[in-house]
Image (tube, rainbow, N blue to C red; front, side, top):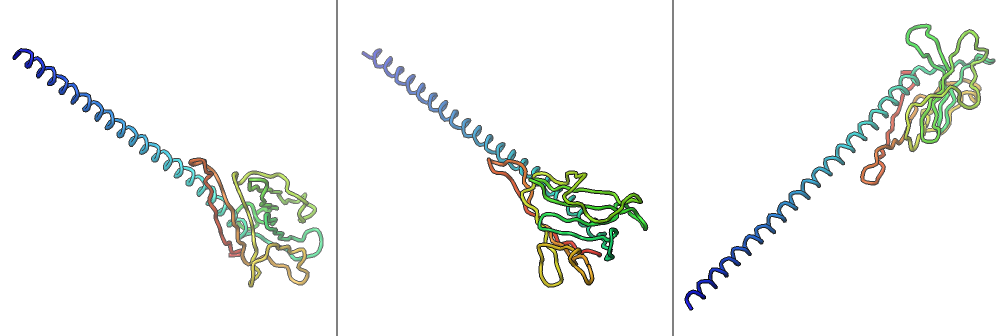
Length: 213
């Protein structure tokens, strides 16, 4: 009888020990799972942050390059208020600007006809050199010889300051008495890029450019 009780106690102890081991294993599995999921979440968050920062850096650099180029060129825009084919005008709409400016630095530098405009989802520039063979300084319809300035552009708009209010259009062809360029131009544009968590990252930029300064 004593032997049977002893065997029973040993069996119960074995089962008890066995049960504790299973619990420990389950707890370990849960801990490992939590650690794995936490690590995966941290990695995913870090990856998204890096992707967003990279996309924002690219967008900001594109915006900086464009505004610097536009500012430098517009500040050198010139007009010539004379009748005839060698009159030089400035023509601005909500989504485009046509003007004449030097394309190289220095006194007596060569000049050319510039066109900055919005085409689809891109900001483009057209350029036509003015030389001794040019028989007119007037702007041709449309834009020729275009090159890409910025891609992935959701919106581009220009407005022109007349000293009192912002105007949507500016055309020195219509200024009969005394033609003049606007004192400043406001440009607003939105660039998009980088699909983050199923959403397209986009950022708007606004710049006021004083002309002739």
